[in-house]
Length: 249
Picture (cartoon, rainbow, N blue to C red):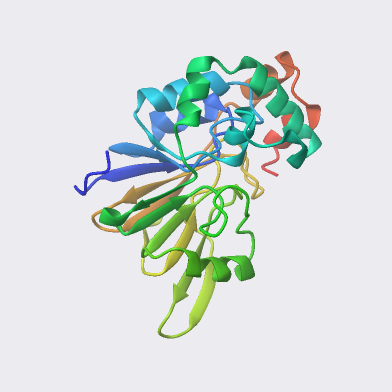
């Protein structure tokens, strides 16, 4: 899976047990060869085992996220806000041993030198917890990876931060939808969230990355949000989590 041959990567992050959104992407995304997931497969949503099984069946290169670690009992739930904590308590109860074993086998950060890439859930400086949520934090994190590019998740917001070291220029760039975005050193890039977008757009977010041409396209897809909300109600997940799914917030 890590061979250096040219391939088109389906890049996803922060699925958060939203199988409906994940399956919509897998079925309707532009052509891809492999799947890379930047962590937080579970948490928030009603389909943790189903999402694990789907990624496992695809042999997806997958990182672990803070929600994944908490669902395994490796992070204290007291570190999470009330709604997230309640969803994690439910997730811990329903995770199968097979799902837990698969989630436990992953790390929060990987370097793929053959693709000049670092993959991380949170940030290169703090792979599980830090949110790269503003220009200052992004600029600080360029010192913590040696590859040309770094793909990260965790914030649930699609964005790119570009550093041109020679000119000392730094800027944040919102990813245009379906337009080829050329990757140029040095770059931090977030594809957005599959199952819990927080940029005001409730559609599932993902990207297609061409490892040979080194361009990426950002995509959004509508999915059956109401079906996920019904499933969340059926298992007793917090009403606030159910409502925000349709708000993209």
